[in-house]
Image 1 (cartoon, rainbow over the protein chains, first blue to last red):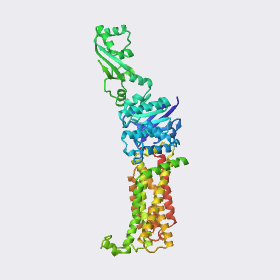
Image 2 (cartoon, each protein chain N blue to C red):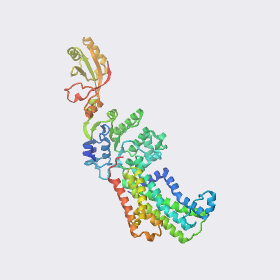
Image 3 (cartoon, helix red, strand yellow):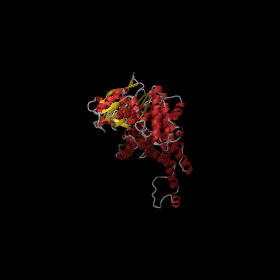
Image 4 (spheres, rainbow over the protein chains, first blue to last red):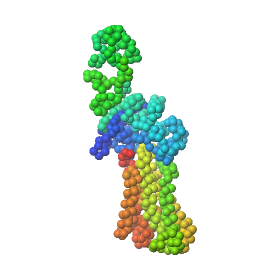
Length: 326
Length: 263
């Protein structure tokens, strides 16, 4: 897979402040890459460097295989972007703002403006002045501008900002469709973990200018995986009962962990056989490992909840989010 | 590149058409011929003006006599000094608005090069301020005709046309530094500071006799504000003003091409 975005030791200093510290990013074509970080972590600086808006202090950036020039030259006809809060010329209508973008992107097809207005559900606002738009509709206008010229790569800074819950879902589905049906590569930054978690195929976590971890599909699936946790007074009897009923399990300290779909969907059945075996559960809960907890541990070195185990390698970082409990 | 430039020019023209700033600058610049006409009415018949309440009984009139030469002189000086302010405000808005509206970032990662966009802004700046100069001149002619002042001659018209349009052109030529300060200062306020500074320094330079060497004093010298321009400025003044303009254009392009854009 070729890289849509590639940075090598990308570093940016503003005087004494090290905003981005030797970041090596590789975003493959067709990926949805979530770029997570706290406020001030270096997300927007990285995005501006990817768009040639700021010059790296060290390292280099390649976008769609082209090295960015010192004067900001790059393959911008094939890249759509939304940087920080969306903005528009307030005295111009939505349509006029988009018409300016169409011309500056050197697109001849005049229907593109109408198409993207429809795509972003801006039809009823098309002739309204941008200065009168709500923040949610201004965000839609920003996204419309990013999508207008049908780019191969989208670089989006906080794309869900300002949108209402229905808008968040709508934009998520739109981005998912673009990625899966049209092969558009999406690089999106956010500090809203649930948004990134639901959309991204890979996640990079930036903290204090450093890329401190990348989570691939497998690791994300691990983080998203649900399991059933069982605690009993007579552990040995419960293990024998579950083995004889054909359930596979693992142990974390004094807790039995079941991961097969049947046990997760039927915790009542597990309770039933344990009661029949004379070892009634003292706790039975379907849990989901949590990106948020993982992120907070990485960025602050602390956990909201105590880890389940100290000796389970990577798993020890991943503590559960309660979904339902008996 | 030509297509890119025409797109950028189209965009800048649309922004100009939709804004109220051109209207306000046109109204502001109309004040020069309007007040010139008012002075002509007063100078034509001061007693009538006093009885109408146009001027106070205590007013001392030292503006000269009511004739075309006086009106043209006033227009030329207003174009040089008033133009520096009104044209400067327009240029500060044209470049600074991209930062106050936070739209500068939408002009960067585009297939249309930044040079085309900045070039289009300079063209719009030059055309609009030139139109304002012509508007001031034409309105002055209309008002002078309506007030019916004496002293018209084709020779006077020729020299006044050179004075007014020349003073306007020299004022326009100096605007690129305003564009630079609006860009580097990321808004309209820093260029306003620059405008005030240059107006004050131009006064100081003119008073101390170094006006012909100070670019921002030269348009006023050209307009005849202190006397016949042949006595107060030379070829070196034109060279300095053109060099200053080119410096301003170059530094503005350089800034947009190379400086980190963080807003």
